[in-house]
Length: 231
Image (cartoon, rainbow, N blue to C red; front, side, top):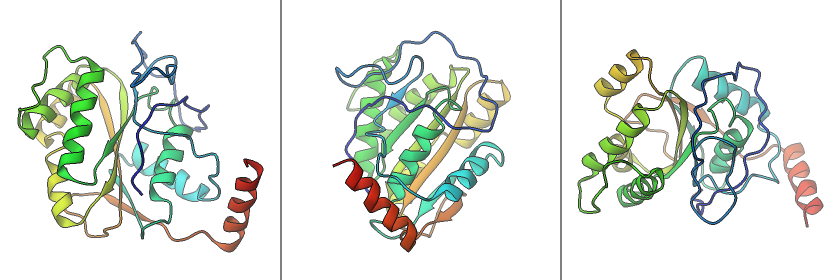
């Protein structure tokens, strides 16, 4: 379920919730020479839209309700190859406007991959305080989240391919500290939402687990037909 990173155009969102939020005039984040993904917002390493995506509509709806209404962290779980990353990416494209066009995709396969993602993220955010590659994970993470804390906007953070218990312990170090997060939210600042994908169903952090299985027969048939249409 690991994916190559990239920036692509954000699809028109489908959302039944109020999307009228404060949108400052920000220069969009662009990782490469590709065109800006949205008119405003930061769209980091989300990758290609899921053209062959089919089914899972109930999962998408439940996920959005859990994230935005229940205000809980959500973890998509399931065996390898069932489409956890595809579901997370589809959700990001479908609901990008709700998050002000701000979706941050972190490769969570290992401590090093998360560190690398945060270093790249810091570079493209052009933080006011330069980050030294020799700094500790804690220092890097604190500077990045401090920047987000200065933004009066909503952000979706997707941590993709979180590993087993050891990997989840590493993950904790790349999430904002609870005390700092509560303080910033209390001041009416940024509003972060967190979505994870993982094969492991044993979580060391408080999340709502959304377990998915292989496609049903009718969904698999539709998937094949869509794939043929794009050949």
